[in-house]
Length: 452
Image: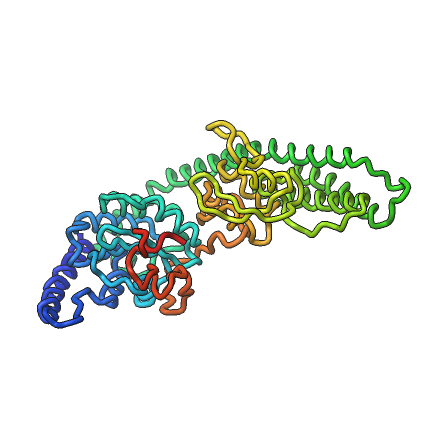
């Protein structure tokens, strides 16, 4: 195969050059024989996988070629560099990204350690963190890098740089082109049938997801209607004023509008408008209740994260999900008390194939449901590290369930942008280097700085 031969030839040229440089720098105080980043970047512009001549014991040439072919076939901007353990780490990701000049996801295996960074337009920081966490600690480099690439190709957006595609072909004979054309023509009918079959399967999945959502949203609307009844407000009752009547009318309108919207939903992303309407109605009820009781009017806050049926939140509280990172979430008064006492909050659970689970551990369809309640870019921070948050960080999610839920990722990749990129995506906010603690690889935690 011409591409594999070319890669082999380039590596054969680099090895003696690196050996000469090592010989020249041997014994020179402060000299470092590490391959220059410009060389690595040039390799990555032509091939998605680079293995340093001093790191061939980490990943063999055959395994590197197989990994490269996998990335090329997927046409995704995923870069992998395998470097020796003593390679300088100061600003490694940022400088590598600058030298390569291509928007994408960059994974680096450095000796026994691994980490990754990406342009936020390709994959969100949380999405990158999830990928790294999933493969962290794997001892076998081949298995680790293959798992990382497999997960990355399902998550990352954009397409591969043109350099990979331009170099992947070689000379193609006229006979081969004619033969290929004949095969494509013969397979056209089959391809069309496959597309139709996939479309039908996708539509079936969307209908099934909507039916699951319908149950949950109907419960929300019913609970909202019961709140209206319990309030027992009459516009003509003694003490009622125009402000109270306006709040009550807004709540009633929201209740009726939510029912109408839900009846008209045709796909899961339509549910977002329903829960937005329910949330607006609940806030109107909270204002009405405050007016009737003579209390200060509540500030406009998102509903309780654990169950929006609890009504508008009263504060933000620190909460750590099992196996996840701590974050601030909006909570109702009852859940704030539970958390302060060390008890579990009252979590909204939904039916899944594994039984009743919190909504953030259920399927992707619950993204639009949550998005209606927690808009304004709030959702990514709330769902960091959860199953639903990971799903919403993939480019395929927007196509199936809608976009606009916050900064889960922009998904434009593979373009040549040179040094014009957000360096914050590649530094992670760690001190003077990518990896914290003065640029050491691991920052004391053994994992390139301990996550984001």
